[in-house]
Length: 113
Image (tube, rainbow, N blue to C red; front, side, top):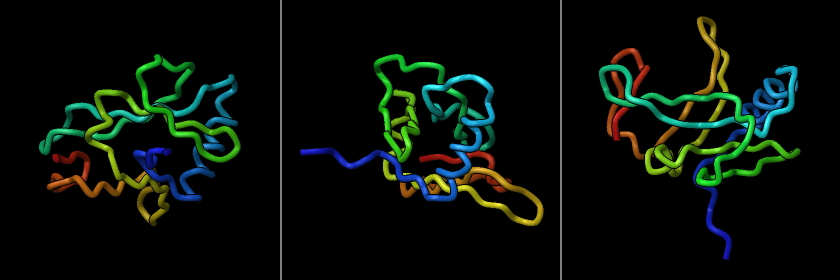
């Protein structure tokens, strides 16, 4: 029995991840998702290119061979999260809809669970 994916990715976010990986200029194993202590609410999401897997990360296989590697320290904070990409008048970027969040700081930069 297959376990459900720890996160879901919208088609718009997937397209943007593909574009980032294609424009990087060197092969990538995928995108690494993590969390770090930051801001007034405690945690913020991090994204970086992954040149390889460390063996302990949760790997989410998406379409066309795109992978998201979830840092093992972040997995309990991102379970059930939907990753999207939005473009607004003043900003654009990845947006995380996390059902486990209990609150966000006023500027939206950090969250707590």
